[in-house]
Image (cartoon, rainbow, N blue to C red; front, side, top):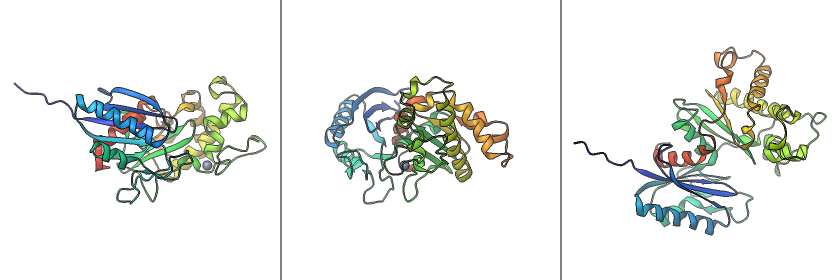
Amino acid sequence: MKKTTPLPRYGGIEAGGSKFVCATGSGPQDLSNEIRFPTTTPEETLDRAVAYFREQRRRHPLSAIGVGSFGPLDARRGSPTFGYITTTPKPGWANTDFAGRLERALELPVYFDTDTNAAALGEHCWGAAQKLKDFLYLTVGTGIGGGAMANGRLLHGFNHIEAGHIRVPHDRERDPFPGNCPFHGDCLEGLACGPAVEQRWNRRAETLPPDHPAWELEAEYLAHAAVNFLLTLAPQRIIMGGGVMEQQQLFPLIRQKVSRLLNNYLRLPEITAHLDQYIVPPELGNRAGILGAIALAQKGGKL
Ligand SMILES: [Zn+2]
């Protein structure tokens, strides 16, 4: 009789600026024991994560931990500050040795990347980017960020990409809102993140009706961003997730505008015939982050 060996289990942390999500498992089929707690000081928050994994480990051994974190951070292997949150304005978290602290406390390998690269990897393993080697994952929520895979590897250069801080055209006559990015004012994030929508219209974004002009303008900014990434990275697909993208009416608006902005320059079927499969929502929805963290742990150093 064939003996079935249990799947190796991994720990995942989706580390956000306001909350941490921790879970264990090996994929969507067995993700379990998820807990959430607020992000407070680094000591308190990381100690809670360590206590959680110690408790989990009593039931099932864990092979590794994956972390998809808010940043900016250092995800360059071999760098002296690998695994650190670096220059974040979040109080107390600048220069925090996130991965090292977990590794020492748990004596397990810790794989560390941005929240958006982790979400991209989650979508690659189990969601909207399966079998694709080149794609972009953009998240539009409290902030705007991006993760990318290029030639089958998560994209890391001298830094992780900072897709939210690119510039897009801003017609101040049409949209006098100056933008709310503390560094750049009217960069993409400053114009199009959730809080920017709320400040511009003085209403919570989710209370704006689907035919409100807010969405036409939002789609315009996001279409400019999509075109910039499409032309520079040539991704096989652009996945757009995050709280703001739960407004499903944005997708057809963005696709129309992308098509208009490209103006028949690219005669490729992805653009001319299948734009609805080119700019898509995430298939893992709001589980992309935590599943991506599990995937980071599973793929380990192979990325
Ligand atoms: Zn900015």
